[in-house]
Length: 591
Image 1 (cartoon, rainbow, N blue to C red):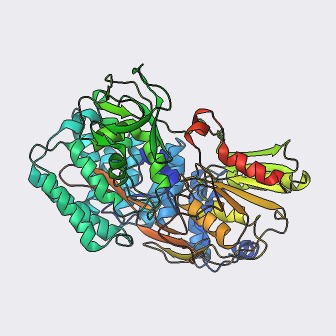
Image 2: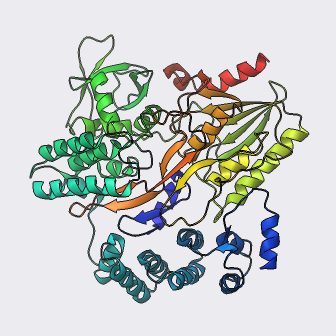
Image 3: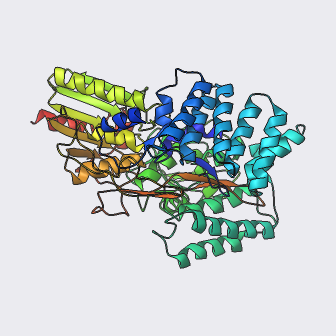
């Protein structure tokens, strides 16, 4: 089941943006000439969705007719077994508000995969968006018949049948209490589901330690435990798997349900292993850059490791956890301290504790204001100084063959054309804030940077795979690739595909890497399956496939390490100095 409301966080997924129900398996002569024209060496079947996209200017009925024609004439040429890719093609139309078109595509999928509960679930959603409750209900019911555990279809059937029922608001859910028995049953379900769905659940933790954590949480819950407290327990269990694709949706849900009166009333930043005040809010006695040593009698040095245990990461990479905390610090601190009604802090250099005014109006920091970002996610700039230097900012690889890959390719192609025509000799590729996307985007960029054929994946395993995918066969570089010196800027935000890309940069020695430890590496338990606990209805996301680049000589436990470690200090942050980019420019100036 792919939910429209989840499209905004699709960028975190690899190799394609797929959200599935935990209990659903969500997962001619002309054609021959097309295959011969491929610049990438392949043995797998061609994508039928890519072929359909080439005809997107045609009415949907003609595209579906083309599908049937190609299936009849060239069943061995195109991949007609990839339900997921077709589903994403349908959702591209649905998300673009082409609802009638999406319905026809989903009808095709249901006809091609008649035993797929997911196909009918998606068709039910499309009919619902189109205002046809009767057909929406019928398709959700059919999905439930095929899979009685499809909780999304169950919810939608109830919503259609009982439209006057008002679901709990997030803050109402926060204070709700379930029985200790219900909590414990859900914790057992959580553990079993993680081990069942996640292909590498025990890669970074032993089975004994994993279940010990669950038993410890089961011992803590009582008949008075609130849902908010229970959710915090669950986040630690999920984070113990050490997989960036396995979490509770970052911290969005916990943030939404935390009452404003319980939020930590300061904006803080954790950097260089110190917690600084960056906005005192309503606390006039505090200053920007005050260092907090303890909160409510507990040392910050104890609080931070406890919070990190609840933040998902790839392996044992802490830079990614740092960025997550700095986004949600005013919300995570209350969870870690048991939701106190008041706060007092100890400031370095101040003898007596400072009582904080409650509540404070504190914003979440989704961006680092000290780094001048690229608003369009893809930016190219030729610098006036140093001469012959350009910066290519790639803040996302979230470009897919079934949707918008052409946008990425056009940008990269035009950028490298400008690089050639402008005589650029030094190229900075800024990958900070890039949380991943498609391997096709990463491969296309690499073809401008390498000077010999390369293979992107050493392993790509997922349910329903029948053919090799893009990246599993050698790829040839572009003849007009960049011949100058390369510099890469990275940070802990780098996830998923960014790890694969940078791992190949590292082992192929494609340039100088600057910044902090990347939030990912060559190994990735990817994709996501949406799961829900039976009693508390808590939803979470579990990686359901494995993708690993050919840079297998690198350690799986750490992120890609830079050649020059540079990070934003508190002074850089407050003075809006981009220390990482500045370091790269100084290196170029020395050339």
